[in-house]
Image (cartoon, rainbow, N blue to C red):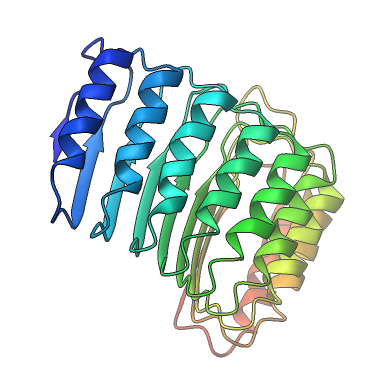
Length: 279
């Protein structure tokens, strides 16, 4: 593990770091934390190029959050990741940057090229991605045919009624997906879209483990109330493969009657081994 967080690392330093990684010909696992530095286009591109040439790299855990990265920087970094066909596990923390839909689309395209990927954790908290970007991201991640375990952290995004269902619709193509963790806390989503998400996830054919978090923040005006929660649960209830189900809906406006009905409906899923729902 290499931790250079908050070290005022700039493009020159990131380029030198990339050169050093390139010399590690037999590197198979790398955890690199370069969060909260001053990396820009040159540094991100050089780092990506070096990672792409680590031909034996199987596990990559890269934290490059809080670097104010824009689409150009993400393009350079993602291009290197997409060149690495040996990757099986990828953890990528890009929270608190300035990535737009264009950057997210390119990132998804490059991740989709990693055909040996079985485990993906992608943190995009608090960026500038819109509906279009998330729609494209879902479709492109689905190109990872061997993906079994997926975690998406998308906190603090604003959806306008199209992108979030399309994201989940795209992921339906991940036929081998068994474990799915999704965090939409403090996102702005309307009630019909929320209901659609439940219906789409319920159709994931081989999903056995679902962890779904949609906590309402103080300053986020989600309108997910009563009947919306019940209908969301009804969508999940269609699943015949789910064995472990964890749902967190704290701080949403749900009355006692709707809570009870949602809980009762989930208990009708006889195949469940683990069930937890928090209101």
